Every structure is written in C-alpha cells, then in structure tokens.
Image (tube, rainbow, N blue to C red; front, side, top):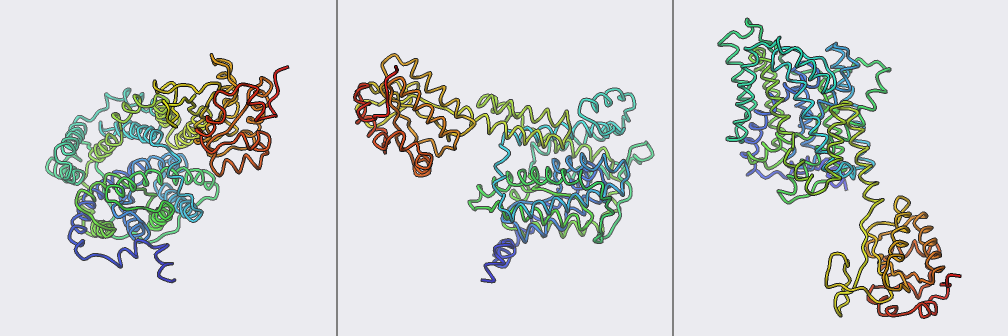
Length: 575
C-alpha cells in the first residue's frame, strides 16, 4: 500500500528506482546536450523576464529535480520558456518600475503562486484543461508571443534600449531611433543570428546557443567590444543561490494572482503539447493531473531558489530526444551541469555581448512562429484560422497577459460556435440495404417515402435548441414530397438538457398540428434516460421510439398521415 502511495505522487522517483543501467550512457550524453542549450537560453530568457541573467540559471536547477521525481514524461525538460517569460515580464514589469531587486522578489512570488495553482489544479483533477486551448488558438498565442519577442529584442540587436510597450508603439519607437544604431553591435548580433539560423537548418543537433555564446565571448575579448560601446552582460554572481523569502507587498497580490492563473493555464497547455507529442512518439502514456502537480512543484522549486516560473521547453526536450535521452535522469544531469556553471563558469559570461542574447531570443522566437501551420489552417478551417489570428492580434495589441484572456475567450467562442451550429443532415437509404447516408453527399442514397430522416450531430442543449427547431421546420416546409413523419436519428445526440427537451416538446406540438408524426431512432442510454425523465418518451409514445433507423423505416415507410396517426394518436390534423 505504501509503495503504491509513493508511486501515485512520485512516479518519476519510482521509475528512477527501477532504472535500467543500460540507459546511463545515453542519459549522460543527453544531459550534457540539454545543458549546453539550457545555460545560454536561460541567461537570454532572464532578459526577457526582466531580471538579471543569473536568475535564469537559478530557475534551471530545482525545477529539473522536482520534475524528475514527480513527472510522468521521460523526455520533457522543464526550464525557462519564451511564452512563460513573456507573461512574467508583462505581470512583473509594471509593478517593479525598473527596480531589479523588486522584480526578482515579484518573480519569486509569482513562481510560487503559479506552482500552488498548478498543484491545486492537479489534486482537483483538472488535467482535462490540457484540451481547453485548442491547437489553433495555442498556435495563435505562440505566434503572437514570437512577434512580441522579436519586437522587444530589436533595440538590443541594434544597440539601444526600447521601452516596454505594445507591438505597434514599440515598432514606432524602434524605427524613430534607427539613427542611434551601434554598427558594431548590429554586425555582431546579425552575424550570430544568421549563424544560429544556418546551424538550425544544416546542423540541428549541434548546441547552437552555446556555440553562439562562446563565439560572442571570444569576439568581445579579442576585439575589446566593451570599449566600442557594445553592451555586455557584466558580472554574473558565482556560487549557488540560497533559499530566500521574497519581500512582498500585499498590495501586489491581486495583480500577481491573476498573473498566476494565466501563467498556470498557458504553461501547462504548452508543456502538455510537448509532453504528449514525445510520449506518442515513444509509445507510452502520461497523466495530465500528475503533470499539473509536477509542474507546480517545479515552479515552487524555482521560486525557492530566487528563480522564476518555468514550463515544458520544447527546444530542450527536442535536444534531449535527439541525443537519445531515455529517462528523467537526463534532467538531473542537466541540473548538475547548471550548478557547475554557477560554481566555475560565471566569470567568462560577463564578457557576453547583450546583442548575442537578443540574437538567441530572436532565433528562438522565429522557431515559435508557425507560418506553415497557419497556411494549412486557412485551407482546412477558415473559422479556426480567424480565431488563431484573433488570438495573435490580441497578444500583440492588448499585451501578453491580456492575450491569455483573448485566448481563453477565443476558446470559449470556438466551443460555443461549434456547439450552436452543429452539422446536420437529411438521410436516405442506400439501395435495398439498411445503410442510411447524407443525401447531399451520397448520390446512391434515396429518400424513404413519406419520411424525413434528420440527423443532428450534437447534444441538444440551450445553445442549439432553437437552431434544431428552425432546421426541422424548414426541411418539412421545403420537402417536395408529403411528409407523414419526421424520424430523428439520435445516434449522434449524446444527451439533451431542459432547453433541448422543451425544443423537442414544442417541435412535436408544431408537427402534430400539421398532421406530421415525430419518431426517434438509435437513442443511446444517457439520451433515453433524459427522454424518460423529461416526459418526452411518454409524450411521443414508446411505439415511436426505435432501436435503429432500419426498424423505424420498416415500420413507418410509405405510411400516410392516417397510418401515422393510428400509431401515434397524439398527432392531430391542422384545423
């Protein structure tokens, strides 16, 4: 019993206890590869989050350890992430007012609050929220984040600082200050950016970010770039961070609370997209509720060591997988190498040009932007394409954090729209078989005489009940042949609510007034239960409820109004 309890909350720890020694070498290689990418990216993302560079490294230690013990994905690497850091900056920057010490305190608090939200959500079994943001909406959100990151880093790439602002205002300021460009800064930054893109295309397995950082430091030292007014990262404190309680102003809690909710939703969805993709590739399952808990523990771990909130990092997870990582040991190895970096390698990082970090961030943002996916979405589903663009423009116009609300609103709009306007069809029989198909799609299907067989591909609920009635009325009125009975194919109708029940009752009355019967076929258990509880079954008559469409057609086909009335005495002629 005790072992099962440990396995329930610490699945990673159980997996480590059963570790296959043959995996050690590939896990060590993968851990080194992940760290080679994670260290420079963490420093770059610190700039994006609005805190000094070392805090990105602090956020790359305990989260990896926590996820290794609690996570269910063998490949997922939790670390600073572009979308997460953009949200952090949007929440923290207005509160910090340019004070780095205050910004660090706020990011620590935000990480801890986000972790608590995630753990509570996992314990409440809210892992289903992984499907709350559809792929098109999440894609639109990440595309908007990518554009925001690029616009925010252009100034650093050109050698001057831009004020935090919306995309259009930031681009306006960028263009108005082009004359301030530091040519040497721009040359270094563009060279690194081009190199990163070429490596990604021709040598994707190489740790491009660490190569970019090494090249930037070498160039800065050889050519004394600091003397040419090229901004450098400066001193990065060495040694391990000590656990520290944040200096919190209670007045900030409201803003941080809303930020934590949005951060939890976006970071969880982003992590789950990555985790599920690699789990599918390697043929194993992950537990969304446990992933919520693991991500929450990772965030709290980051907050404890003065770091900021993290998420599933798709680029570093891809590096892990490409290097052959087999288990969560990869994350532990990467965390150990980050510790060694803090202990022995911070001095060289002081000479790193800021423009190199801007190039790393811009390259990462270009990787986030999914133009082919948008083009494919436009072809497949114009409605979802528009929702994706709405989310994108919401992020770059009203801001990153309100963009979360836009994404959630877009998800709800998509859900309501698809439910309120479901597909429906008029069915006909194919030849002398018992198969029934959509008359508009199957030329060999023919109407059943005197019957209008109607399929409604959704639950019958308050958002679509009126549409259901309008469609049936119109189809009966437009039918070229006399209709003696409407047969509702309920095979795609999982259930109905009280509004749907009222719609069926009203429709039955309207049809009865015209001398037309109403029958139901292929109603499954939950729907039959609701039909009985709402009294519709008694109203329609059990003899007008059939187990299959074939049974309904066999009983009702060719029946005139009089025959239907005989089977269904509730039907009255129109007076």
